[in-house]
Length: 120
Image 1 (cartoon, rainbow, N blue to C red):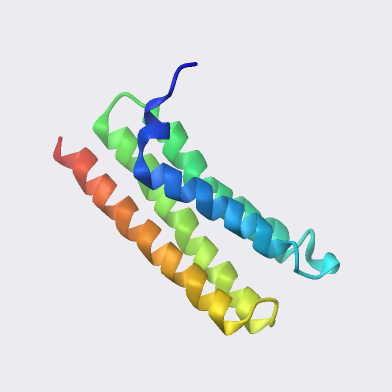
Image 2: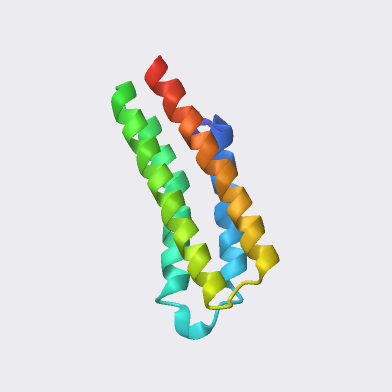
């Protein structure tokens, strides 16, 4: 089986695990949020890795960097959703801090990856 270049990226691997963590977290959200915050946070967290995968297939460094920027934007959107979940008391403070720290790490890695791509 062929392993694609995005699968080798540590940043994508972390995004993949983060998506899994979000899906597990949202299982405890109220059922009336299924088409609201639950859907939004699942979508934005999935988009982090999706954009990395799609960008890896682009030819130019500039185009690849653009998709990494989109991935970063999805991570920022996810931070907003985590804040919302905390404000609505769907998650506790420990969960909030844990997810914020994971997102801090992801956004730092995305920024470093983008800089690296543009440098080459």
